[in-house]
Length: 372
Image (cartoon, rainbow, N blue to C red; front, top):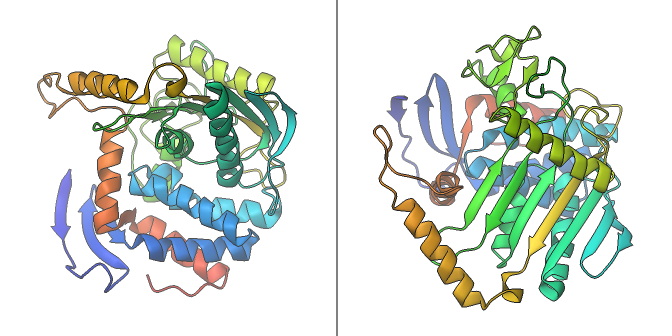
């Protein structure tokens, strides 16, 4: 709920701060995308990344922030910088091919920065799918690669259908279980459209991503019931008391999370969720998780224009569903995030005062001049 709104009404290029509002007790400000990216790139270069790696990495974080997915945005910059400085994320490495066929490839990510390795894997999958119709590319020795849709949407913008998945450290209980066995294990699906927005789903297999709990801890917010449970298995609204995440949809989400773990560990060669290392707490070991990129080229099944017309018609019919009482409309997957991204492009990227304080401190720690 919007409690108070106060504009600083300055032109976009006149100041880094573009707009400020108070939402749920947290000050939210808009900032220039270019200014934020420039600061982040400098911080990550000082931490040890090469410039090209820092560039795509900041594109990855700001992609999430621009879409309102702040759990995967600049709020994680400090952890990434520390992991690079400690050497558990390696600089200057590329994904290399271990095994390959016309339509498949198994890659070693060498624990490089996830945004770079993930994009290299997706580029290879797209190239193979253009030739063969379908492609699967896996990665082992991977690090957290940000929002899954950073890769699936990249593929859909090139006319491809894409499915992306990754596993993560076990911090969630399976349905009916009392021990952490599953990661939040996210996956994303994107389908290109023509006049309609692309179908663009991205979600964790837990009720929400663990990063949302971490962000609530930082911002001093409570969380809704159903996000997580304490160490005795009791639902809690205090993010500091969350010991385990819970799967969405009960047994169904639990099964899907396990499937992703199987794909990313047994097929891709990453460590499974129970053996991988914590992104937030373990600075002595690389995460060694796995990624799976699946790409389908619609052109190999029917003419491009026919496919896009069918997708448009399907999405239009779906979005025309009458809304239930209490709802404005039926949104397509990714539609709300897409609208926020469009707004961010025009008005600047929204960030909380908590994230900005962290960014200022990182600038001090890494000797980067800032004017936020």
